[in-house]
Image (cartoon, rainbow, N blue to C red; front, side, top):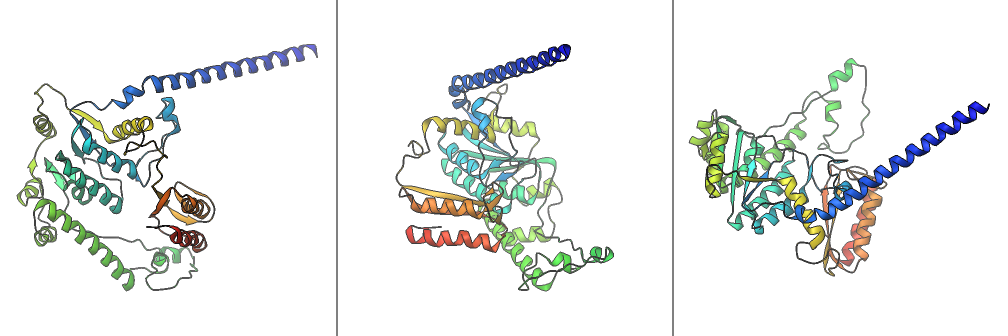
Length: 395
């Protein structure tokens, strides 16, 4: 028995000592993180070198709103980080680049497919169009342009394509998979309640082809988006909408040379040749290197700077007595609190109420990106919107 207690107490002491050592190590890491954060704050704020080019790649998922990583302040930014950038951060950074003397221009690096919806892409494109008022350059380069990539590229002063690359320009289409026959083979019968012939979300489970109503609405949607794209491409490239439609209908662009011939791109260049063009634009010597700064790094540099200096207008954040509340509603609508990917009626209703009763907030913007959801949860939010409209403008 004596040996048992001796072994037990020895093991317990070992566990306690190990716990204390681990706690001390963790505390040391935290303290070192804080020290490095504040000692390197100036370095982070000045990481944008003079004569730099902002590189924009949208191959990561673009979310409506960027989520701040709490580990950034400890110098552990890669820990706990989710992929993707916030559309709000992207737009702020492009806006900041307009007046940032260190940024001489923007390079749209479009080698990877854009991971953003059509609406999100339109927001980014509009921000780039506004950036052009600064008279700084925007160049686009890719080995292969999809239609989405090319649409963004058309804001550029010059569009470059690899001499052996590819380009797609043929209009829009949509494909829908239907499961009716597969379910029949599995002896499964779907029980669906719906109202209205244009409620087509459940059609794949009930039909084996597109209904006339769904075909009509899909064609209307696609034709509307395509017409919008052609109009905006026409403005930037100086090619008529009719000519662009003819190029798409005839599948004219079969090679990079074809794309240049019809003036969809400006020049065919290898990557190294494009870099030389950038060097000339920046007045660099042949042996000099281009100072690139990736968009995500530029976002980090800007957020760190603003964390110390205040907001865009130079005021300390939260001090203004004339504010506009922007309430993000992203994802499916459901009852409860929700999260970053869902619209919780409890959370959103409270946010609207808080904005309504805050005298420093003069207007409310509801930024909605949602496929829909619960009618009950929507009604809870709707009620707060009605009340807010009586107190101040709601957009």
